[in-house]
Length: 91
Image 1 (cartoon, helix red, strand yellow):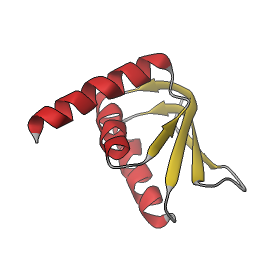
Image 2: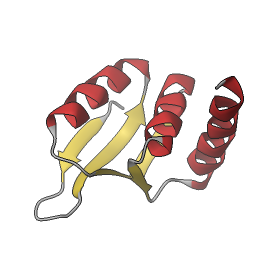
Image 3: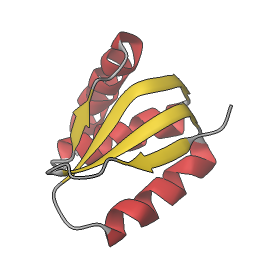
Image 4: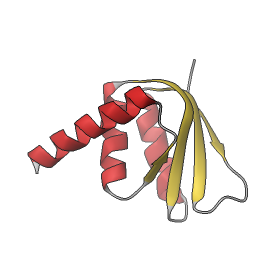
């Protein structure tokens, strides 16, 4: 399964719904899409089934930068928190 990105109409802050799998190539697409959107942006990950390490590192970095992550599956939340700790150590 590939990643599908769906804008949620009439939602504030701007909400993007992510569905499927987030892999390394998808991170670049997400970066570009988010850069074009008005702030603030939130990502709804309720229907995300699988993530890879690059995706988790990206999610940890953007959350640390203020982007809201909603409805993360528990394993993704735990992994993002772990990566955020590692990001803090590298600064």
